[in-house]
Amino acid sequence: MGKKIPMWQCILVLLCMIVFLMWGILKDAGGEAHIALILAACVGAIVACANGWKWAYLEKGILANINRAMQACLILAVVGAMIASWMAAGTIPSMMYYGILIISPKIFLFTACLLCSIVSLATGSSWSTAGSMGVALIGVGTALGFSPAMTAGAVVSGAYFGDKMSPMSDTTNLAPAIAGTNLFTHIKHMVYTTGVACLIAWVAFLVMGFTASNGAAADMETINEILAFIQGSSKISVLTLIPPVFVIVAVAMKLPALPTLVGGVLLGVPFFFWNSAAVGEALGGEEVKYNVFNILNNGISMGNVPDDASDVIIELAGLLEGDGMQGMFWTISLILCAMCFGGVVDVSGIMGAVAEALLKIAKGTGGLVLATELCCLIVNAICCDQYLAIILPGRMFKEAFEDRKLAPQNLSRCLEDCGTITSNFFPWNTCGATMHAFLGVPQWGAGGYGPFAILNYCNPIVSIVYGFTGITMKKMTDEEYAAIMEQREKDKEEALKAMEA
Image (cartoon, helix red, strand yellow):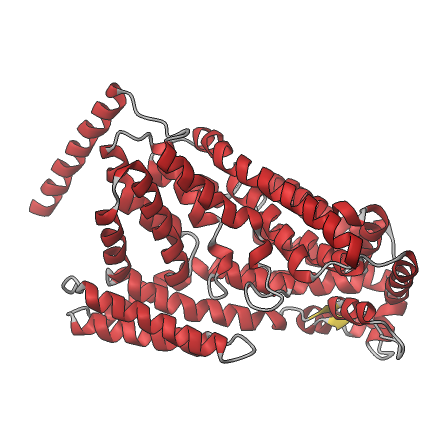
């Protein structure tokens, strides 16, 4: 263990990270952040070692951080194979085809958000929602004349609604555990902020849908051309929807995520042979049975674009390509680089020092809520992990909420209102890298979905407004406050005894 790192050195590490990322992402059109994160981790490690922190201790912190992200990396790899499987099976083309037939362009964005909200609420997983329904909705939106950024914003808004409101979500269980309240009290308290943010998002998507569809939606001739292209690229059938139905039901039944996703991959394989004519054409005439593993590993392109194809057909053909498992390893390597930096700043106390500084400037209930949510946002950006964005601020601000006699569900709500829901805004965060990989749309810049993820940035704003106005900021009773103070004293006595022992 080393000494406490001075604040100016902590700020230096964070500034280096920002400079390196700006250099890596803004200068490089491809958005390369790997080396920038590794360089930032090196600076953090040098500063920590200069203050007496042993490399062996920092290395353990890095490995612990990577270990937290390993399930995410495995899920990413399997989802890559699943998308390739569903592409070759005709599942995703069928979802696109039926979506174009059923969904009205004027309410498309609202419908996309609502559908993703329902699926994520049932499954508790924003990742499963974006990796299955989200991929198909991007194609439907493109066919109807909406930009991928708009559609991705609606998908992400809906996916994260369920991620923070479903009792089956890991973050929804983690936040009340950290704050010291129970699950359903936490969910009920979130309705006040998330419900308002969701209504704002729905109204915005309805307005955007009516506005955009009037000037951008494809006419019937173009839609018929798109439908014909999809039918020509794959065999369209309701039967091919069996794999996604299985995944949604299995996750909703709380079956383990990885086996469920592997099941979704394998359920798609028999449909390769059902869809053998289209798959064989995409493989250049090679037999399907000799290429099953190759399809899952490297993906397949199902759309052969005619020479006289319109721009929308060319764009749609690009969405009918799956990179397979191999295509996800760029994202996985980005997550591993981010975890290296996050591990260093976490175990060396750099992130804790930033949180303490925010706590010192928090004035009043509104200032405390603002400081908590800023801390969640900063942890998401710096530690690159959604769970740390709940755990670290939760630990740091728990006593401050108690001292103001604020009920623990206020803290748990703040942690989710910003920690859970803003994680996807940072391209190097595990959630941000995943959303980009699944939807093929960056967060920011030209064509980024960030400005359209309305729920995700409205929710923290609503929460902060409630903090300053006192709306729904539930207070403890005198008995509850006395019990918490008594428990706090007992915890201190036990800690002193442990130190003496």
